Length: 290
Image (cartoon, rainbow, N blue to C red):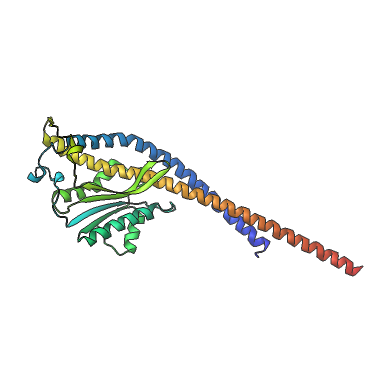
């Protein structure tokens, strides 16, 4: 059994750790609130864009004609792009692990189908993971923090989207942590391109009059919608990361508090036993002298 001095040092160490984890929990809570407000502000805009695209369906032009390259649906896929959104920092439970597992599963499945995957990774944790796996990464991005901007998202996504337009890749998918609510976040795989809109989703067979013209509608609306989806994913991932870190730090704080109680009890028992032993030694000495 550890002596009183060792137990006292352990109590001090655990108490200091608890102060750190509690502070990190408070910071993550504050950041999570800000991120959740950003989701509330961006979701209506993104949802409306998606709704407009579904209503338009295929009314904007013929994908096979090549007039709108983003609407093309390749008969066979040879190479695809995968964007993976992870965090720059750890101490957030299984947040990064869950996303990376889903990404690695997607890559394995595509490789088994004979499809090559160009991986674009956002976040130091994802970059470190692919380096550990000795897997080549097409793009690395570490600029995204808890407040990503649309310009940052556009800078990353536009070159990948251009590769699809030029026929260099035949699909774009995204792996990120989807924010369902403050109590539920889950890793999600989302296909961004090719964009397949069924007739039922697309306007129910209705004819649309597009003004000013289809080129203006599809040429601007579709790229904007795709970029917005990627931006929304970054915003949701940021909120999910902070919530995951808050939960992890709360659990760490609770564990540290429990450990401190256990060590305190051991310290009190050890100290009491030591005092009792000293009293018995004094009494024994007095009896011997008497």
